[in-house]
Amino acid sequence: MAFIEIEDLCFAYPSERGERRMALDHVSLSVEEGEFVAVLGTNGSGKSTLAKHLNAILLPTSGVCRVAGMDTRDGAHLWDVRQTVGMVFQNPDNQIIAAIVEDDVAFGPENLGVPSDEIRRRVDDALAAVGMTAFHGFAPHLLSGGQKQRVAIAGTLAMQTKCLVLDEPTAMLDPVGRKEVLDTVRRLHRESGITVIYITHFMEEAAAAQRVVVMEDGKVVEDGSPKEIFSRVDAMRKRGLDVPLAAEIAWRLRKQGIRLPEDIVTDEELAVALCR
Amino acid sequence: MPIELKGVTYTYMKGTPFERTALKDVSLTIADGSLTAIAGHTGSGKSTLVQHLNGILHPTKGEALVDGVSLEGKGKENLLARRKVGMVFQYPEQQLFEETVAADIAFGPKNLELSEEEINRRVRSAMEFVQLDYETYKDVSPFRLSGGQMRRVAIAGVLALEPSYLVLDEPTAGLDPQAREELLRRIAELHRKKKLTIIFVSHNMEDIARMAERVVFMHDGRILVDAPPSEAFFADEEMREAGLAAPPTVALLSRLREAGLPVEADAFTADEAAKRIAKAIRKKGGASC
Image 1 (cartoon, chains in turn brown, yellow):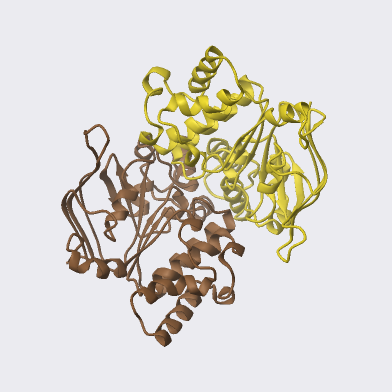
Image 2 (cartoon, chains in turn cyan, purple):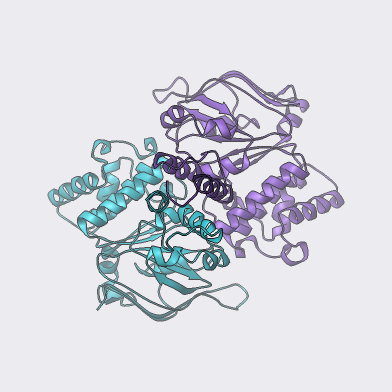
């Protein structure tokens, strides 16, 4: 059984006029433990709605969502599900609640009733894992956006979460902050084997994942490696999405008759292909 | 007539232990009809700077003028000067509050005490400009729209004030690629067709490279670079100091140059970059460096 199993999931937001709009329309998807999956799609394609099912913020209208074997609709497992899957949202200022960085990271385990020496250990480990140890006594409002997002990630790590769901974590950050957050996520994935679901509009970030899932109108319409997905430049364009710059340029050069491999995604790969 | 900042210093929470100077003796003239981009990392002072452009903040030292009139003061002319500058904040869709799209856009003009007819005309024209069909959307709740549409409603609300200058703080943050593309096209058109003077703040170097005639990099409360994109994005040392990165096209072309392909790096769109590469390859007479 896969770590996350979504079977024929539908979700409809209630609406004032009585008609229901399907935000998720018969979605099936499974994610293995330790995978790094990027989710792409236009605004309104259902990405965030899907993410919110993974820790039971939303429950399926029909179909099933299972996390580590637990059905998210089973109230008895609610806290286990939330402890297994940690969420990081777009706006760093909406998810930090304490007046000091380490108190914020401790908030989750405190609520789980973890003994205090164990909390101390977890907070220290979590801050070290995101490279924020030096800031443990800072007030969050003195941090940059990228640092705040790393604190938010540390907060989920202190819950010993197995899976990190990030919903456009870099949309509000400057280029340096974006890199900090992406590097932190990649390192956690590589070193701790944490499962990552990463929603983004930045194609270069998606290229860092092992697998890319594309959503459109509440459905999963593509699912493959970054190389497979980003080599279909025309198809991505039609869906209102981009591809990484190197992929687009390689595609344009191929159209002009320059012979290049189909699966170029990074600047490095283009440089190698052009300058062998 | 321009917007002028003359020797502006701004200190937050002056006289308290939390005192912090966010702008240090900044002078900047935004020429009529220009399109200027402002970039800088978090805390560089760029948001503080733009808030001086329509009198949300007043200088601790120095002065901010629009068409020669100070933005500070309670006089009628100061008020009119402030009104010439429209401000679209970050995530403006979070400020929508009315029950219908038309009512939300009409809110600003209503406060200007214009006639019903004039308000209507402005709402229609603003909606037309952001490409929201009047009949289709006027009675729809703004909260039923997509993210990109909501942002266009918010921008229409500012356009309905008919400002001569438009300041946009991170206008494309959080939009998907298509919505971003559309919004940038609208902004370029505002500049071209309505001759609006535009100042936009962005973290997105690609947007800046494509749009701006002039680029201002802020760092530590000061202006570090003030130049056209073709120069600004090649000021490697200053960009590093400001914590900024070159636009993806420049980074890619520079990487290819390093690998030995004789290609000019100052292209700001994928199309342009591909043409440069193709030309360089043909000049070399084959697909290898």
